[in-house]
Amino acid sequence: MGKDPTERQNEDDIEVRCPECGTVFHVPLEKAEREMRARCPKGHDVPLAKALG
Ligand SMILES: [Zn+2]
Image (tube, rainbow, N blue to C red; front, side):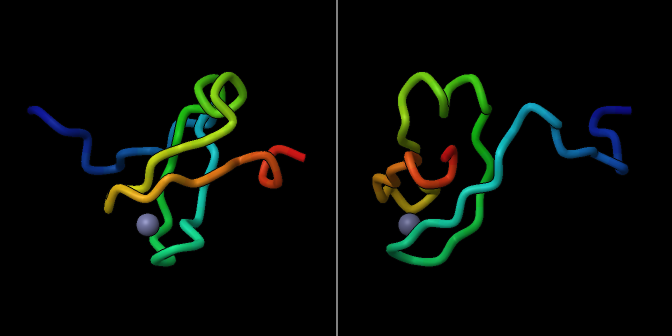
């Protein structure tokens, strides 16, 4: 019960690597396309223009 142990990555997420600290995290593609930026778990602002082409 509770969390699925096989927890799949949401296929609508993209993988982002923070250029500041190197942390890899996921953001929803929809949000990434809309905002063109993400915030890494450590609070760094990460531009996504390159990641999305
Ligand atoms: Zn970071």
